[in-house]
Image (cartoon, rainbow, N blue to C red; front, side, top):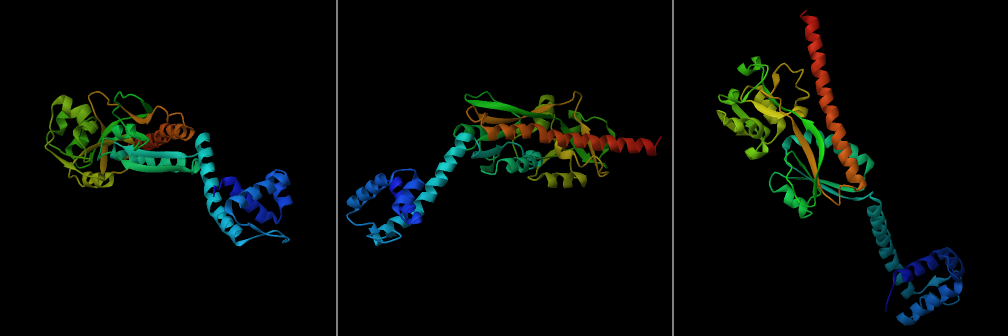
Length: 318
């Protein structure tokens, strides 16, 4: 017996309408065409699907079995069709993210919260890119987007710029370096440097400052969580270098000092790497837009806090 989706729709329509005439009208076909379809299906099955001369038209036991199948299959088919329509329209899809920086969570979660409101049907997941090579995973389609500050030329991959940031020195206000207006590589020689547990080629303090200057800190300590790094720094058990957006709430905290790295100001750029074919998807384009604007708002709020605190000090100490 060869059952097609149209047969299941026919059985369901006749059952719901209670007769051939009304079902044919609902299905926008002639009654004779519908009758012919039912007759052909009954010939295939070798049994009658409807109780003869019943009004309204009732399904036979065989017809009820086919109706049960229709009620199971058709909703799944309709859901699949809606999903494919959404894919074509760009309203659904998958966005699995790998992150090559611990501190990115500080701005990424607010961005994803905004994204979720506009794209509730997109499957979003975060796959920490610290334990495996994120960019090769992007090419293998294991992830769809990689947050990175280290663009590498790769075929079929686009590094979409997000925003610039400054790696900033942070220490306890009791640390002797708190007296300096700018921190240079040599200042780290007698300091315990607290970092994330990643290789040095993924840490701005090494790639941009210490390694070029051939300077080694007194010691290093790897810590997984930003909050724990700041707790240790606040207790004067070490110093750290973190992106400026992480330190936005410390400007008015007297337990900490934040200083730029020098002698030349260090500026880094964060990117979202995507496959070429994915960059123009509507939901991906919207995420990139949010990824460019929301973190900058955090940075501006940080600057506003700094300016406000500076103005208060000028008023108190003329």
